[in-house]
Figure 1 (cartoon, rainbow over the protein chains, first blue to last red):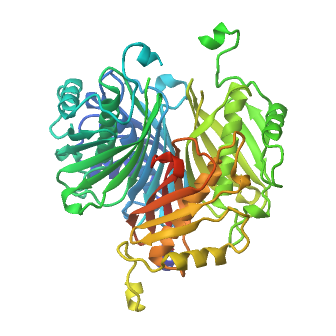
Figure 2: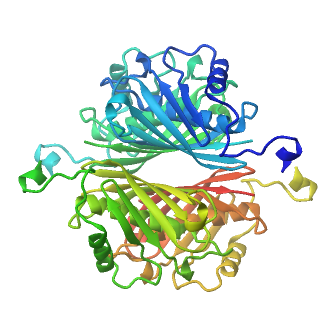
Figure 3: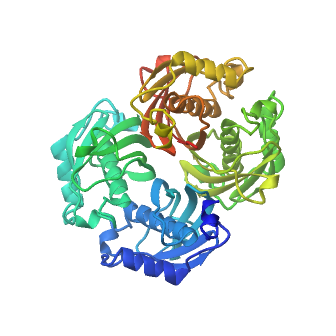
Length: 152
Length: 152
Length: 152
Length: 152
Protein backbone atom coordinates (compact mmCIF):
# COMPACT_ATOMS: atom_id res chain seq x y z
CA UNK A 1 0.00 0.00 0.00
CA UNK A 2 0.93 3.62 -0.22
CA UNK A 3 1.50 3.84 3.49
CA UNK A 4 3.80 0.84 3.51
CA UNK A 5 5.70 2.20 0.56
CA UNK A 6 6.32 5.28 2.66
CA UNK A 7 7.81 3.15 5.40
CA UNK A 8 4.82 3.33 7.71
CA UNK A 9 2.83 0.45 9.10
CA UNK A 10 -0.66 0.32 7.63
CA UNK A 11 -3.57 1.62 9.64
CA UNK A 12 -5.00 -1.25 11.62
CA UNK A 13 -7.58 -1.79 14.32
CA UNK A 14 -5.23 -4.25 16.00
CA UNK A 15 -2.63 -1.75 17.15
CA UNK A 16 -2.70 1.79 18.49
CA UNK A 17 -0.29 4.59 17.66
CA UNK A 18 -1.19 6.90 20.56
CA UNK A 19 -1.54 5.93 24.20
CA UNK A 20 -3.54 7.64 26.97
CA UNK A 21 -0.90 10.28 27.64
CA UNK A 22 -0.42 11.08 23.96
CA UNK A 23 -4.17 11.39 23.37
CA UNK A 24 -4.66 13.71 26.34
CA UNK A 25 -1.68 15.83 25.34
CA UNK A 26 -3.11 16.12 21.83
CA UNK A 27 -6.49 17.21 23.19
CA UNK A 28 -5.04 19.83 25.50
CA UNK A 29 -3.03 21.23 22.65
CA UNK A 30 -5.97 21.27 20.24
CA UNK A 31 -8.35 22.87 22.72
CA UNK A 32 -6.05 25.15 24.73
CA UNK A 33 -8.62 27.10 26.75
CA UNK A 34 -11.70 25.01 27.28
CA UNK A 35 -14.46 26.09 29.61
CA UNK A 36 -14.30 24.13 32.88
CA UNK A 37 -15.80 20.71 32.34
CA UNK A 38 -15.97 21.01 28.57
CA UNK A 39 -13.05 18.74 27.73
CA UNK A 40 -13.11 14.98 28.30
CA UNK A 41 -9.97 13.03 29.04
CA UNK A 42 -8.98 9.56 28.02
CA UNK A 43 -8.61 6.99 30.81
CA UNK A 44 -7.99 3.82 28.77
CA UNK A 45 -6.73 3.20 25.25
CA UNK A 46 -6.26 -0.20 23.64
CA UNK A 47 -6.61 -1.65 20.14
CA UNK A 48 -10.24 -1.11 19.16
CA UNK A 49 -11.25 0.60 22.39
CA UNK A 50 -11.03 3.94 24.20
CA UNK A 51 -12.65 4.90 27.47
CA UNK A 52 -12.99 8.54 28.47
CA UNK A 53 -14.44 10.63 31.27
CA UNK A 54 -16.15 14.02 31.32
CA UNK A 55 -16.91 16.12 34.39
CA UNK A 56 -19.57 18.43 32.98
CA UNK A 57 -19.72 22.02 34.23
CA UNK A 58 -22.90 23.86 35.09
CA UNK A 59 -23.28 25.07 31.51
CA UNK A 60 -23.99 21.46 30.56
CA UNK A 61 -27.23 21.32 32.54
CA UNK A 62 -30.55 21.93 30.90
CA UNK A 63 -33.82 23.02 32.56
CA UNK A 64 -34.79 20.21 34.90
CA UNK A 65 -31.22 19.70 36.10
CA UNK A 66 -30.25 16.92 33.70
CA UNK A 67 -27.18 16.88 31.49
CA UNK A 68 -28.14 18.28 28.11
CA UNK A 69 -28.40 16.27 24.90
CA UNK A 70 -25.76 18.32 23.04
CA UNK A 71 -23.34 17.70 25.92
CA UNK A 72 -23.86 13.96 25.57
CA UNK A 73 -23.61 14.05 21.78
CA UNK A 74 -20.52 16.23 21.91
CA UNK A 75 -18.90 13.84 24.37
CA UNK A 76 -19.71 10.86 22.10
CA UNK A 77 -18.23 12.69 19.12
CA UNK A 78 -15.06 13.55 21.02
CA UNK A 79 -14.47 10.04 22.30
CA UNK A 80 -14.98 8.65 18.80
CA UNK A 81 -12.40 11.18 17.59
CA UNK A 82 -9.95 9.95 20.25
CA UNK A 83 -10.54 6.36 19.15
CA UNK A 84 -9.81 7.25 15.52
CA UNK A 85 -6.67 9.20 16.42
CA UNK A 86 -5.44 6.39 18.66
CA UNK A 87 -5.32 4.20 15.54
CA UNK A 88 -4.28 6.59 12.78
CA UNK A 89 -2.01 8.85 14.80
CA UNK A 90 -1.97 12.61 15.39
CA UNK A 91 -0.86 13.64 11.90
CA UNK A 92 -4.07 12.87 10.08
CA UNK A 93 -7.17 15.03 9.94
CA UNK A 94 -10.46 13.25 10.49
CA UNK A 95 -13.95 14.72 10.48
CA UNK A 96 -17.29 13.38 11.64
CA UNK A 97 -19.52 12.43 8.74
CA UNK A 98 -22.49 11.06 10.68
CA UNK A 99 -23.55 10.73 14.30
CA UNK A 100 -26.64 8.82 15.35
CA UNK A 101 -27.56 9.19 19.00
CA UNK A 102 -30.14 7.25 21.00
CA UNK A 103 -31.19 8.87 24.27
CA UNK A 104 -31.89 5.93 26.54
CA UNK A 105 -32.29 7.22 30.09
CA UNK A 106 -32.26 10.54 31.98
CA UNK A 107 -28.68 11.73 32.36
CA UNK A 108 -28.20 12.86 35.95
CA UNK A 109 -25.48 15.35 36.94
CA UNK A 110 -22.07 13.97 37.82
CA UNK A 111 -19.16 12.39 35.97
CA UNK A 112 -19.93 10.88 32.58
CA UNK A 113 -18.07 7.92 31.13
CA UNK A 114 -17.90 6.71 27.55
CA UNK A 115 -16.72 3.50 25.97
CA UNK A 116 -15.99 3.71 22.27
CA UNK A 117 -15.42 0.52 20.30
CA UNK A 118 -14.27 0.30 16.70
CA UNK A 119 -16.76 -1.54 14.49
CA UNK A 120 -14.77 -1.03 11.32
CA UNK A 121 -11.62 0.87 10.50
CA UNK A 122 -11.25 1.25 6.75
CA UNK A 123 -8.97 3.45 4.73
CA UNK A 124 -11.63 6.09 4.32
CA UNK A 125 -14.25 5.52 6.99
CA UNK A 126 -14.16 4.55 10.64
CA UNK A 127 -17.43 3.35 12.19
CA UNK A 128 -17.70 3.23 15.95
CA UNK A 129 -20.12 2.31 18.72
CA UNK A 130 -20.14 4.61 21.76
CA UNK A 131 -21.96 3.95 25.05
CA UNK A 132 -22.32 6.69 27.64
CA UNK A 133 -23.02 5.92 31.28
CA UNK A 134 -22.90 7.45 34.75
CA UNK A 135 -21.69 6.07 38.04
CA UNK A 136 -25.17 5.49 39.43
CA UNK A 137 -26.51 3.74 36.38
CA UNK A 138 -25.31 0.23 37.25
CA UNK A 139 -23.88 -0.22 33.76
CA UNK A 140 -27.12 0.77 32.05
CA UNK A 141 -26.17 3.30 29.38
CA UNK A 142 -27.80 6.74 29.32
CA UNK A 143 -27.09 6.98 25.62
CA UNK A 144 -25.69 5.08 22.68
CA UNK A 145 -24.13 6.49 19.53
CA UNK A 146 -22.98 5.31 16.16
CA UNK A 147 -20.30 7.64 14.90
CA UNK A 148 -18.73 7.64 11.45
CA UNK A 149 -15.52 9.52 10.74
CA UNK A 150 -14.11 10.25 7.32
CA UNK A 151 -10.35 9.71 7.14
CA UNK A 152 -8.61 11.82 4.50
CA UNK B 1 -59.85 10.96 23.26
CA UNK B 2 -58.61 12.19 26.58
CA UNK B 3 -57.65 15.55 25.18
CA UNK B 4 -61.01 16.08 23.55
CA UNK B 5 -62.76 14.96 26.68
CA UNK B 6 -60.86 17.72 28.44
CA UNK B 7 -62.21 20.28 26.00
CA UNK B 8 -59.00 20.61 24.02
CA UNK B 9 -58.57 20.18 20.29
CA UNK B 10 -56.53 17.06 19.45
CA UNK B 11 -52.88 17.43 18.62
CA UNK B 12 -52.54 17.88 14.87
CA UNK B 13 -49.84 18.69 12.37
CA UNK B 14 -52.30 20.93 10.52
CA UNK B 15 -52.54 23.67 13.14
CA UNK B 16 -50.12 25.34 15.53
CA UNK B 17 -50.80 26.38 19.10
CA UNK B 18 -47.80 28.69 19.54
CA UNK B 19 -46.67 31.39 17.13
CA UNK B 20 -43.21 32.93 16.69
CA UNK B 21 -43.58 35.32 19.62
CA UNK B 22 -44.92 32.62 21.94
CA UNK B 23 -42.12 30.22 21.02
CA UNK B 24 -39.39 32.81 21.58
CA UNK B 25 -40.93 33.88 24.89
CA UNK B 26 -41.02 30.25 25.98
CA UNK B 27 -37.36 29.79 25.06
CA UNK B 28 -36.20 32.91 26.89
CA UNK B 29 -38.10 31.80 29.96
CA UNK B 30 -36.74 28.24 29.83
CA UNK B 31 -33.13 29.35 29.31
CA UNK B 32 -32.95 32.60 31.27
CA UNK B 33 -29.21 33.25 31.12
CA UNK B 34 -27.75 31.72 27.99
CA UNK B 35 -24.22 32.42 26.92
CA UNK B 36 -24.12 34.91 24.02
CA UNK B 37 -24.98 33.11 20.82
CA UNK B 38 -26.11 29.93 22.52
CA UNK B 39 -29.85 30.38 22.07
CA UNK B 40 -31.56 30.22 18.68
CA UNK B 41 -34.71 32.16 17.95
CA UNK B 42 -37.65 31.25 15.81
CA UNK B 43 -38.25 33.37 12.70
CA UNK B 44 -41.14 31.46 11.11
CA UNK B 45 -43.76 29.08 12.47
CA UNK B 46 -46.52 27.44 10.46
CA UNK B 47 -48.32 24.09 10.51
CA UNK B 48 -45.65 21.45 10.01
CA UNK B 49 -42.75 23.89 9.76
CA UNK B 50 -40.49 26.07 11.89
CA UNK B 51 -37.50 28.11 10.76
CA UNK B 52 -34.97 29.37 13.27
CA UNK B 53 -31.71 31.29 13.37
CA UNK B 54 -28.61 30.98 15.52
CA UNK B 55 -25.77 33.49 15.75
CA UNK B 56 -23.06 31.30 17.25
CA UNK B 57 -20.59 32.84 19.69
CA UNK B 58 -16.87 32.19 19.69
CA UNK B 59 -17.29 29.20 21.99
CA UNK B 60 -19.01 27.44 19.08
CA UNK B 61 -15.86 27.38 16.95
CA UNK B 62 -13.62 24.36 16.86
CA UNK B 63 -9.92 24.21 15.88
CA UNK B 64 -9.79 25.19 12.21
CA UNK B 65 -12.32 27.98 12.67
CA UNK B 66 -15.42 26.03 11.68
CA UNK B 67 -18.62 25.80 13.69
CA UNK B 68 -18.42 22.69 15.85
CA UNK B 69 -20.49 19.56 15.36
CA UNK B 70 -22.13 19.73 18.80
CA UNK B 71 -23.22 23.31 18.05
CA UNK B 72 -24.91 22.12 14.86
CA UNK B 73 -26.49 19.10 16.56
CA UNK B 74 -27.66 21.19 19.50
CA UNK B 75 -29.22 23.70 17.12
CA UNK B 76 -31.01 20.90 15.25
CA UNK B 77 -32.31 19.48 18.52
CA UNK B 78 -33.56 22.88 19.68
CA UNK B 79 -35.38 23.67 16.44
CA UNK B 80 -37.04 20.26 16.51
CA UNK B 81 -38.13 21.03 20.07
CA UNK B 82 -39.64 24.32 18.90
CA UNK B 83 -41.49 22.51 16.12
CA UNK B 84 -42.95 20.02 18.60
CA UNK B 85 -43.99 22.74 21.05
CA UNK B 86 -45.55 24.79 18.27
CA UNK B 87 -47.97 21.89 17.73
CA UNK B 88 -48.54 20.53 21.22
CA UNK B 89 -48.31 23.78 23.16
CA UNK B 90 -46.12 24.92 26.07
CA UNK B 91 -47.75 22.79 28.74
CA UNK B 92 -46.44 19.44 27.66
CA UNK B 93 -42.99 18.03 28.32
CA UNK B 94 -41.22 16.45 25.39
CA UNK B 95 -37.78 14.85 25.28
CA UNK B 96 -35.49 13.84 22.45
CA UNK B 97 -35.39 10.09 21.98
CA UNK B 98 -33.10 9.94 18.93
CA UNK B 99 -31.10 12.34 16.81
CA UNK B 100 -29.35 11.28 13.63
CA UNK B 101 -27.08 13.92 12.13
CA UNK B 102 -25.38 13.90 8.72
CA UNK B 103 -22.49 16.34 8.38
CA UNK B 104 -22.65 17.40 4.74
CA UNK B 105 -20.33 20.37 4.26
CA UNK B 106 -17.89 22.51 6.28
CA UNK B 107 -19.87 24.89 8.45
CA UNK B 108 -18.29 28.33 8.15
CA UNK B 109 -18.66 31.00 10.87
CA UNK B 110 -21.67 33.29 10.65
CA UNK B 111 -25.40 33.01 11.16
CA UNK B 112 -26.88 29.54 10.97
CA UNK B 113 -30.41 28.81 9.78
CA UNK B 114 -32.52 25.72 10.27
CA UNK B 115 -35.71 24.49 8.66
CA UNK B 116 -37.54 21.81 10.61
CA UNK B 117 -40.40 19.93 8.96
CA UNK B 118 -42.75 17.50 10.65
CA UNK B 119 -42.64 14.05 9.06
CA UNK B 120 -45.08 12.53 11.50
CA UNK B 121 -46.81 13.81 14.59
CA UNK B 122 -48.30 10.93 16.54
CA UNK B 123 -49.67 10.81 20.06
CA UNK B 124 -46.40 9.51 21.44
CA UNK B 125 -43.69 10.27 18.90
CA UNK B 126 -42.88 13.20 16.65
CA UNK B 127 -40.44 12.57 13.80
CA UNK B 128 -38.87 15.56 12.09
CA UNK B 129 -36.48 16.45 9.30
CA UNK B 130 -34.11 19.36 9.99
CA UNK B 131 -31.82 21.04 7.44
CA UNK B 132 -29.12 23.46 8.55
CA UNK B 133 -27.63 26.01 6.18
CA UNK B 134 -25.61 29.22 6.11
CA UNK B 135 -26.02 32.39 4.09
CA UNK B 136 -23.18 31.62 1.72
CA UNK B 137 -24.23 28.07 0.99
CA UNK B 138 -26.70 28.88 -1.79
CA UNK B 139 -29.30 26.59 -0.29
CA UNK B 140 -26.92 23.66 0.03
CA UNK B 141 -27.31 22.33 3.56
CA UNK B 142 -24.29 22.00 5.85
CA UNK B 143 -26.09 19.32 7.79
CA UNK B 144 -29.28 17.29 7.93
CA UNK B 145 -30.90 15.71 10.95
CA UNK B 146 -33.69 13.30 11.76
CA UNK B 147 -34.97 14.04 15.21
CA UNK B 148 -37.48 11.98 17.20
CA UNK B 149 -39.20 13.40 20.27
CA UNK B 150 -41.19 11.39 22.78
CA UNK B 151 -44.40 13.13 23.80
CA UNK B 152 -45.62 12.22 27.28
CA UNK C 1 -49.61 -0.33 36.85
CA UNK C 2 -52.29 -1.67 34.61
CA UNK C 3 -50.37 -4.84 33.96
CA UNK C 4 -49.89 -5.55 37.64
CA UNK C 5 -53.54 -4.81 38.31
CA UNK C 6 -54.29 -7.53 35.78
CA UNK C 7 -52.17 -9.97 37.74
CA UNK C 8 -49.25 -9.92 35.36
CA UNK C 9 -45.64 -9.14 36.19
CA UNK C 10 -44.48 -5.84 34.70
CA UNK C 11 -42.46 -5.86 31.53
CA UNK C 12 -38.81 -6.05 32.45
CA UNK C 13 -35.49 -6.51 30.70
CA UNK C 14 -34.39 -8.83 33.49
CA UNK C 15 -36.72 -11.71 32.72
CA UNK C 16 -38.04 -13.32 29.55
CA UNK C 17 -41.55 -14.61 28.94
CA UNK C 18 -40.78 -16.70 25.85
CA UNK C 19 -37.93 -19.17 25.46
CA UNK C 20 -36.25 -20.43 22.27
CA UNK C 21 -38.95 -22.99 21.51
CA UNK C 22 -41.79 -20.55 22.13
CA UNK C 23 -40.18 -17.87 19.93
CA UNK C 24 -39.61 -20.28 17.05
CA UNK C 25 -43.14 -21.64 17.32
CA UNK C 26 -44.48 -18.09 17.23
CA UNK C 27 -42.44 -17.32 14.11
CA UNK C 28 -43.53 -20.42 12.25
CA UNK C 29 -47.12 -19.64 13.06
CA UNK C 30 -46.85 -15.99 12.01
CA UNK C 31 -45.06 -16.77 8.73
CA UNK C 32 -46.60 -20.11 7.73
CA UNK C 33 -45.16 -20.47 4.21
CA UNK C 34 -41.87 -18.67 3.98
CA UNK C 35 -39.65 -19.02 0.97
CA UNK C 36 -36.72 -21.35 1.74
CA UNK C 37 -34.13 -19.45 3.69
CA UNK C 38 -36.34 -16.46 4.36
CA UNK C 39 -37.11 -17.17 8.01
CA UNK C 40 -34.49 -16.96 10.76
CA UNK C 41 -34.69 -19.08 13.88
CA UNK C 42 -33.73 -18.29 17.41
CA UNK C 43 -30.83 -20.27 18.90
CA UNK C 44 -30.44 -18.51 22.26
CA UNK C 45 -32.76 -16.41 24.39
CA UNK C 46 -31.92 -14.87 27.74
CA UNK C 47 -32.83 -11.68 29.60
CA UNK C 48 -31.66 -8.81 27.40
CA UNK C 49 -30.27 -11.02 24.63
CA UNK C 50 -31.37 -13.14 21.68
CA UNK C 51 -29.17 -14.88 19.15
CA UNK C 52 -30.59 -16.07 15.84
CA UNK C 53 -29.46 -17.76 12.65
CA UNK C 54 -30.48 -17.31 9.02
CA UNK C 55 -29.58 -19.62 6.14
CA UNK C 56 -30.25 -17.33 3.20
CA UNK C 57 -31.61 -18.81 -0.02
CA UNK C 58 -30.42 -17.88 -3.49
CA UNK C 59 -32.97 -15.07 -3.70
CA UNK C 60 -30.94 -13.28 -1.03
CA UNK C 61 -27.88 -12.87 -3.26
CA UNK C 62 -27.31 -9.69 -5.19
CA UNK C 63 -25.17 -9.20 -8.32
CA UNK C 64 -21.61 -9.98 -7.30
CA UNK C 65 -22.65 -12.98 -5.19
CA UNK C 66 -22.89 -11.21 -1.84
CA UNK C 67 -25.85 -11.32 0.51
CA UNK C 68 -28.05 -8.33 -0.24
CA UNK C 69 -28.50 -5.34 2.03
CA UNK C 70 -32.27 -5.80 2.41
CA UNK C 71 -31.66 -9.42 3.50
CA UNK C 72 -29.32 -8.20 6.22
CA UNK C 73 -31.65 -5.40 7.29
CA UNK C 74 -34.65 -7.72 7.30
CA UNK C 75 -32.74 -10.20 9.44
CA UNK C 76 -31.78 -7.45 11.90
CA UNK C 77 -35.41 -6.32 12.09
CA UNK C 78 -36.65 -9.86 12.71
CA UNK C 79 -34.14 -10.61 15.47
CA UNK C 80 -35.01 -7.34 17.17
CA UNK C 81 -38.67 -8.38 16.97
CA UNK C 82 -37.82 -11.71 18.61
CA UNK C 83 -35.95 -9.89 21.38
CA UNK C 84 -38.95 -7.65 22.06
CA UNK C 85 -41.40 -10.57 22.06
CA UNK C 86 -39.15 -12.58 24.36
CA UNK C 87 -39.67 -9.85 26.97
CA UNK C 88 -43.23 -8.72 26.41
CA UNK C 89 -44.74 -12.06 25.37
CA UNK C 90 -46.66 -13.17 22.30
CA UNK C 91 -49.86 -11.32 23.03
CA UNK C 92 -48.65 -7.82 22.33
CA UNK C 93 -48.24 -6.21 18.93
CA UNK C 94 -45.02 -4.34 18.34
CA UNK C 95 -43.92 -2.47 15.23
CA UNK C 96 -40.57 -1.14 14.07
CA UNK C 97 -40.37 2.62 14.33
CA UNK C 98 -36.77 3.11 13.22
CA UNK C 99 -33.93 0.98 11.92
CA UNK C 100 -30.45 2.33 11.38
CA UNK C 101 -28.07 -0.04 9.61
CA UNK C 102 -24.32 0.27 9.14
CA UNK C 103 -22.85 -1.92 6.41
CA UNK C 104 -19.41 -2.77 7.73
CA UNK C 105 -17.95 -5.54 5.55
CA UNK C 106 -18.90 -7.59 2.47
CA UNK C 107 -21.42 -10.23 3.48
CA UNK C 108 -20.35 -13.53 1.92
CA UNK C 109 -22.82 -16.35 1.23
CA UNK C 110 -23.45 -18.84 4.01
CA UNK C 111 -25.19 -18.88 7.37
CA UNK C 112 -25.75 -15.52 9.01
CA UNK C 113 -25.85 -15.00 12.76
CA UNK C 114 -27.24 -12.09 14.74
CA UNK C 115 -26.88 -11.03 18.34
CA UNK C 116 -29.51 -8.60 19.55
CA UNK C 117 -29.05 -6.86 22.90
CA UNK C 118 -31.60 -4.71 24.67
CA UNK C 119 -30.33 -1.18 25.28
CA UNK C 120 -33.54 0.02 26.83
CA UNK C 121 -36.93 -1.55 27.34
CA UNK C 122 -39.48 1.10 28.26
CA UNK C 123 -43.25 0.96 28.35
CA UNK C 124 -43.57 2.40 24.88
CA UNK C 125 -40.20 1.98 23.15
CA UNK C 126 -37.61 -0.76 23.01
CA UNK C 127 -34.16 0.20 21.70
CA UNK C 128 -31.81 -2.57 20.64
CA UNK C 129 -28.33 -3.12 19.28
CA UNK C 130 -27.97 -5.87 16.66
CA UNK C 131 -24.69 -7.25 15.28
CA UNK C 132 -24.67 -9.50 12.24
CA UNK C 133 -21.77 -11.79 11.50
CA UNK C 134 -20.78 -14.84 9.45
CA UNK C 135 -18.78 -17.90 10.34
CA UNK C 136 -15.68 -16.78 8.48
CA UNK C 137 -15.63 -13.31 9.91
CA UNK C 138 -13.73 -14.15 13.11
CA UNK C 139 -16.17 -12.15 15.18
CA UNK C 140 -15.90 -9.08 12.98
CA UNK C 141 -19.47 -7.98 12.25
CA UNK C 142 -20.65 -7.54 8.66
CA UNK C 143 -23.27 -5.10 9.85
CA UNK C 144 -24.60 -3.34 12.90
CA UNK C 145 -28.09 -2.05 13.51
CA UNK C 146 -29.96 0.09 15.98
CA UNK C 147 -33.58 -0.92 16.00
CA UNK C 148 -36.43 0.83 17.81
CA UNK C 149 -39.78 -0.86 18.32
CA UNK C 150 -42.95 0.86 19.45
CA UNK C 151 -44.86 -1.17 22.04
CA UNK C 152 -48.59 -0.51 22.04
CA UNK D 1 -8.60 15.59 -11.46
CA UNK D 2 -8.15 12.08 -12.67
CA UNK D 3 -11.54 12.09 -14.30
CA UNK D 4 -10.89 15.31 -16.18
CA UNK D 5 -7.49 14.09 -17.26
CA UNK D 6 -9.29 11.12 -18.74
CA UNK D 7 -11.46 13.44 -20.79
CA UNK D 8 -14.52 13.07 -18.63
CA UNK D 9 -16.47 15.80 -16.91
CA UNK D 10 -16.14 15.66 -13.14
CA UNK D 11 -18.88 14.07 -11.09
CA UNK D 12 -21.42 16.73 -10.24
CA UNK D 13 -24.86 16.94 -8.67
CA UNK D 14 -25.85 19.49 -11.32
CA UNK D 15 -25.90 17.11 -14.29
CA UNK D 16 -26.91 13.52 -14.84
CA UNK D 17 -25.14 10.95 -16.98
CA UNK D 18 -27.99 8.43 -17.21
CA UNK D 19 -31.60 9.18 -18.03
CA UNK D 20 -34.74 7.18 -17.17
CA UNK D 21 -34.30 4.71 -20.03
CA UNK D 22 -30.63 4.14 -19.30
CA UNK D 23 -31.28 3.59 -15.60
CA UNK D 24 -34.06 1.09 -16.23
CA UNK D 25 -31.98 -0.77 -18.80
CA UNK D 26 -29.13 -0.95 -16.30
CA UNK D 27 -31.43 -2.36 -13.63
CA UNK D 28 -32.93 -5.01 -15.89
CA UNK D 29 -29.48 -6.07 -16.91
CA UNK D 30 -28.17 -6.21 -13.36
CA UNK D 31 -31.18 -8.13 -12.02
CA UNK D 32 -32.14 -10.33 -14.97
CA UNK D 33 -34.72 -12.58 -13.32
CA UNK D 34 -36.38 -10.76 -10.49
CA UNK D 35 -39.43 -12.17 -8.74
CA UNK D 36 -42.58 -10.38 -9.89
CA UNK D 37 -42.84 -7.06 -8.13
CA UNK D 38 -39.34 -7.17 -6.72
CA UNK D 39 -37.74 -4.64 -9.06
CA UNK D 40 -38.59 -0.93 -9.01
CA UNK D 41 -38.40 1.21 -12.10
CA UNK D 42 -37.39 4.81 -12.50
CA UNK D 43 -40.07 7.24 -13.66
CA UNK D 44 -38.19 10.54 -13.38
CA UNK D 45 -34.50 11.45 -13.37
CA UNK D 46 -33.08 14.96 -13.10
CA UNK D 47 -30.01 16.55 -11.53
CA UNK D 48 -30.24 15.80 -7.82
CA UNK D 49 -33.50 13.86 -8.01
CA UNK D 50 -34.87 10.46 -9.02
CA UNK D 51 -38.43 9.21 -8.62
CA UNK D 52 -39.20 5.50 -8.84
CA UNK D 53 -42.16 3.15 -8.52
CA UNK D 54 -42.51 -0.34 -7.09
CA UNK D 55 -45.49 -2.66 -7.52
CA UNK D 56 -44.86 -5.09 -4.67
CA UNK D 57 -45.80 -8.74 -5.12
CA UNK D 58 -47.52 -10.86 -2.51
CA UNK D 59 -44.19 -11.90 -1.04
CA UNK D 60 -43.82 -8.31 0.13
CA UNK D 61 -46.76 -8.51 2.52
CA UNK D 62 -46.27 -9.27 6.17
CA UNK D 63 -48.81 -10.69 8.63
CA UNK D 64 -51.55 -8.11 8.91
CA UNK D 65 -51.53 -7.40 5.18
CA UNK D 66 -49.19 -4.42 5.22
CA UNK D 67 -46.09 -4.04 3.06
CA UNK D 68 -43.14 -5.32 5.04
CA UNK D 69 -40.37 -3.17 6.45
CA UNK D 70 -37.58 -4.91 4.48
CA UNK D 71 -39.54 -4.27 1.27
CA UNK D 72 -39.66 -0.57 2.07
CA UNK D 73 -36.01 -0.43 3.11
CA UNK D 74 -34.95 -2.39 0.03
CA UNK D 75 -36.89 0.00 -2.18
CA UNK D 76 -35.26 3.02 -0.50
CA UNK D 77 -31.83 1.46 -1.00
CA UNK D 78 -32.50 0.74 -4.67
CA UNK D 79 -33.77 4.23 -5.47
CA UNK D 80 -30.75 5.74 -3.74
CA UNK D 81 -28.57 3.49 -5.90
CA UNK D 82 -30.35 4.75 -9.02
CA UNK D 83 -29.78 8.34 -7.92
CA UNK D 84 -26.06 7.71 -7.45
CA UNK D 85 -25.73 5.95 -10.81
CA UNK D 86 -27.63 8.72 -12.56
CA UNK D 87 -24.83 11.08 -11.53
CA UNK D 88 -21.71 8.92 -11.71
CA UNK D 89 -22.69 6.72 -14.63
CA UNK D 90 -22.98 2.95 -15.05
CA UNK D 91 -19.29 2.17 -14.98
CA UNK D 92 -18.67 2.81 -11.32
CA UNK D 93 -19.37 0.44 -8.47
CA UNK D 94 -21.09 1.94 -5.47
CA UNK D 95 -22.14 0.24 -2.25
CA UNK D 96 -24.43 1.26 0.59
CA UNK D 97 -22.51 2.19 3.69
CA UNK D 98 -25.43 3.23 5.90
CA UNK D 99 -29.20 3.29 5.72
CA UNK D 100 -31.35 4.89 8.37
CA UNK D 101 -35.07 4.27 8.01
CA UNK D 102 -37.95 5.90 9.86
CA UNK D 103 -41.24 4.03 9.68
CA UNK D 104 -43.83 6.80 9.73
CA UNK D 105 -47.20 5.30 8.84
CA UNK D 106 -48.74 1.88 8.01
CA UNK D 107 -47.80 0.96 4.45
CA UNK D 108 -50.94 -0.33 2.73
CA UNK D 109 -50.79 -2.67 -0.28
CA UNK D 110 -50.57 -1.10 -3.71
CA UNK D 111 -48.00 0.80 -5.74
CA UNK D 112 -45.18 2.43 -3.79
CA UNK D 113 -43.43 5.59 -4.90
CA UNK D 114 -40.09 7.01 -3.80
CA UNK D 115 -38.45 10.37 -4.23
CA UNK D 116 -34.73 10.41 -3.68
CA UNK D 117 -32.90 13.73 -3.38
CA UNK D 118 -29.16 14.23 -3.26
CA UNK D 119 -28.06 15.98 -0.09
CA UNK D 120 -24.37 15.79 -0.90
CA UNK D 121 -22.42 14.19 -3.72
CA UNK D 122 -18.75 14.05 -2.81
CA UNK D 123 -15.92 12.14 -4.39
CA UNK D 124 -16.23 9.31 -1.91
CA UNK D 125 -19.64 9.56 -0.31
CA UNK D 126 -23.12 10.33 -1.57
CA UNK D 127 -25.74 11.21 1.06
CA UNK D 128 -29.39 11.09 0.06
CA UNK D 129 -32.85 11.70 1.46
CA UNK D 130 -35.55 9.24 0.34
CA UNK D 131 -39.29 9.59 0.99
CA UNK D 132 -41.64 6.69 0.33
CA UNK D 133 -45.35 7.22 -0.18
CA UNK D 134 -48.46 5.52 -1.55
CA UNK D 135 -51.25 6.82 -3.72
CA UNK D 136 -53.77 7.08 -0.90
CA UNK D 137 -51.46 8.84 1.46
CA UNK D 138 -52.13 12.37 0.23
CA UNK D 139 -48.42 13.12 0.10
CA UNK D 140 -47.83 11.98 3.66
CA UNK D 141 -44.81 9.68 3.55
CA UNK D 142 -45.03 6.14 4.92
CA UNK D 143 -41.29 6.15 5.47
CA UNK D 144 -38.20 8.30 5.24
CA UNK D 145 -34.64 7.18 4.75
CA UNK D 146 -31.16 8.62 4.85
CA UNK D 147 -28.92 6.57 2.62
CA UNK D 148 -25.15 6.87 2.31
CA UNK D 149 -23.29 5.27 -0.58
CA UNK D 150 -19.54 4.84 -0.80
CA UNK D 151 -18.18 5.67 -4.25
CA UNK D 152 -14.96 3.85 -5.11
